[in-house]
Image 1 (spheres, rainbow, N blue to C red):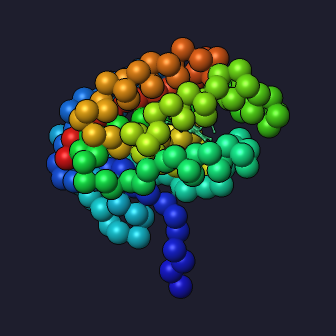
Image 2: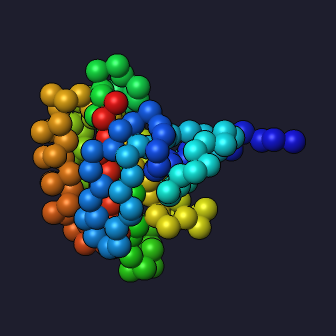
Length: 183
Ligand code: HEM
C-alpha cells in the first residue's frame, strides 16, 4: 500500500527546474553551493545524485487566526505563475528556547510582538509562498519556506526579508540559509 504522503523534497545538485543564483548562510552553518535545485514530491525518486536534499511536510497552521486566514486567502496568489521566474528557498531552524515556550507565548511573539502576518500581508499578492515543516521528520531544518515572485517584485521581496529579520521572532532563529533561484 502506498499512501499519498505530503512530503516535498528540495534537492540541490546538477539537475532541476531552478538555477541557483546564490546560497547565503544568514545564521548558522552553511549549505554547499550547487548549480541547480529540483523540487519534487517524495513519491518520485528525484535527483538521486543530489549534493543535499531537504524534506518538508505540509501541515496544519499553528498560529493563524480565522480572520487572518481569511484575509490571507483573499489576497494571496498561487505558486507556479508564469511571470514568477524568481524564487527563494529559505530553510530555518528555531532555538530550543523557542520550542520551550508555550503555544500562547509563541503566538504572541509571532504576531502581536513581531507582526509576521501583518508584515507579510503587505507583500501579497506579489509574493506567493509555501511553508513546510521538517521538525517532526527529524530533518536538519524545522521549516522550509518557499517564495515565488517576478523580477519586478524582487526589490519588494528583499524589503520583506529585511523587515522580518529585525523582529523579535528572528531572535529565536538559530539557523537560516537563503537560497535564490531563477527559472
Ligand atoms: C509562518 C505568512 C513571509 C518564514 C507563517 C505563518 C503565516 C505566514 C500566516 C503562520 C503559519 C501558521 O499559522 O502555522 C507569511 C506571509 C509572508 C511571509 C503572508 C509574505 C509573503 C515569510 C518570509 C519568511 C517566512 C519571507 C522567511 C524569511 C516563516 C516561518 C514560519 C512562517 C519560518 C514558521 C514559523 C513557526 O511556525 O514558528 N508565515 N509569511 N515568512 N513564516 Fe511566513
